[in-house]
Length: 66
Image (tube, rainbow, N blue to C red):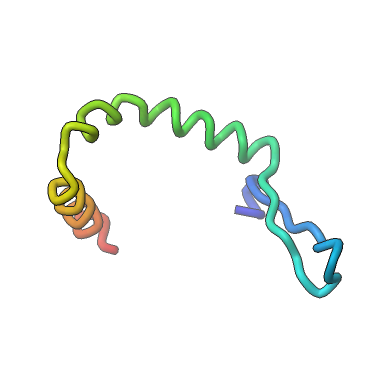
């Protein structure tokens, strides 16, 4: 994500050994775009009960090879 310019590492003001991940403007724009593109699924997914959503998740993970 850092290489793609979506996140950047910033030093932690309280501990210089620690880095904090911060979203970039590009990352923020991409996240907003993704949310807009996924709006089509909100209504159909809202109609599913918890077990159906879990089953759907499991099937999608299986299809994606995760």
